[in-house]
Image (cartoon, rainbow, N blue to C red; front, side, top):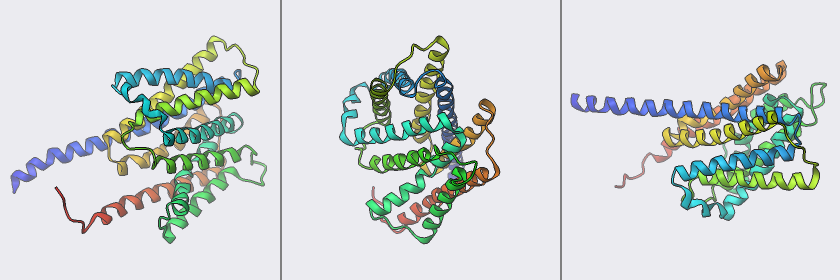
Length: 312
């Protein structure tokens, strides 16, 4: 009896450490993404938006390719041509373009908070497309999160920005992307899926640059900012991959909402943005709704497994 306790203690300690390491990776990944967005926003003061996306995509694709080869995923690159992976990448293009255009005209924290309604929209999509059951509590949480997004956007007030609609485009596109992810074959490694997104972003940015912009020759300062944005973006994708690799989903996923906290911090320190009281309340409602949905999922999954026969 006592020997089992002794043997179980190291396992429990290792489990807690893996949870902690996964959480740290997720929180840092969210910070890296906001750092990438901040560097991009600075670069767009001199470089047109599509050209910036193209240059950032080119640099991040190259960095990601080097990582893929180093991680021995080079032989799996052909899988990035899977139709569902490509469709997911196109949704990411819409989300990324919408987010980048929105932060050009709005505080990063406001756009990020609106975009964080994505998990709630995924629930609605799962109901409409996959016919998944949503109880009353889920619908109330969805309503709570959308109400929070409206408080951040503040339509009809002097604080409202017409560009807030792009934040909702981000959430809708990202929710569609997450629903499509179910169709991506499980044998495609996550880094390969991330690489396909970066390549599609680069190509779409290049197309937009050729069609609608007059490219400029960036100075060394802008080259440095775009390179930094690319490196931080790849670091963010790597951090998410490591977070889910190290820690269990139920422990790691809630800390994706650290993105909003990083965005508020970056907006205040780097751009002097201060969200008003209504926006702060809205962010709190979105965070509360999202975390409660994740908590409800974590309680539901173990109960769904009860009563199932144990198979070897």
